[in-house]
Amino acid sequence: MKILGIETSCDETAAAVVADGTEILSSVVSSQIDVHHRYGGVVPELASRKHIEAIIPVLSEALDNAGISTGQLDAVAVTRGPGLIGALLVGFSFAKAYAFTLDIPWVGVNHLEGHINSVFLEPDPPPFPFVALLVSGGHTSIYHVTDHTSARVMGQTRDDAAGEAFDKVAKVLGLGYPGGGVIGRLAEKGDPKKIIFPRAYLDKSGFDFSFSGIKTAVNRYLQTHENEYEQQYPDIAAGFQEAVADVLSYKVIRAAMEKQCEHIAIVGGVAANTRLREKVSQDAGEKGIAVHIPGYDLCGDNAAMIAGVGYHYLKSGKMADINTDVYSRVR
Ligand code: KG4
Ligand code: ZN
Image (cartoon, rainbow, N blue to C red):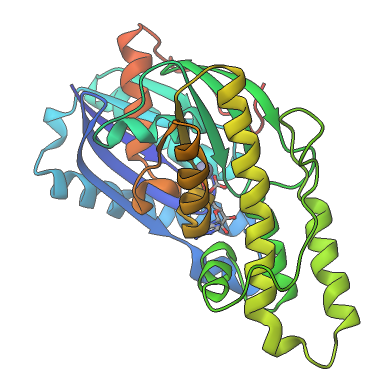
């Protein structure tokens, strides 16, 4: 079954063709970073306009790369939420009309389930049940995953998402948006033990997180070390990254132990962070827990993960109809 996936929930316009929920025939992602960079974050109205411009070229490229024509598609899967309403509506309305014209089934899927399912697009996926850590720009949660479309929240951030913390710290250091990649690269040149930032909620609050305080801690550090701080950027980045990776790794491993799961998945944009990948793999390895992390291309927003989870929705008989609408928050 060949499914066309479409994703426009934030600032990436993406289309992909995936066979049987696992085999990626093509995956095209058009990023809007250049548009939002100068504003230090995503501007919703600009995102919607850019999706409108990009959606048809991105779709054409995805079909070309997969070497198939529209007539060979069996279904369409599209992100329904959570995300920016205006941005979601572009992909969603497009998918609805496209499936209607081709007279094929279509389904609107949850973006977060898409991220969780990204590990099934890689060889050697985890067996059910497993524990998933979803770390992105908008979400930071731990799930107990029992099926492709069944995930129960064990804990989540009470304020900022981990990716948001990377973005905010990059902003106070004047490094632009998004901040994850640039902080990661800077941290490689620094010493993670030189400046110790707080590990909020490390040994309390169950599996919940808090990342708003660490940005303030970085700010405070900068204010009290005004004359020397430029040379210290790599140490600040490394100290900050280590604190975030420590908390994420500690909590996801404890969650897996509580659920007696021998497999952990790390998904979402922040899963591209080299230190986090290294730390969770090492810490979990010591406890005999296997760690599954998708390749870099599948960590950030993409449409292959949407087509992937869409396959399981359709297999279980879930389909959307013309009245189905998008949603901005998880209900
Ligand atoms: O999953 P994603 O592409 O979009 C959302 O659904 O939010 O995640 C984007 C987030 C941004 O906050 C970005 O700074 C972060 O992922 N990110 C990283 C890295 N690459 C992207 N954070 C840490 N290290 C990275 N290498
Ligand atoms: Zn995402």
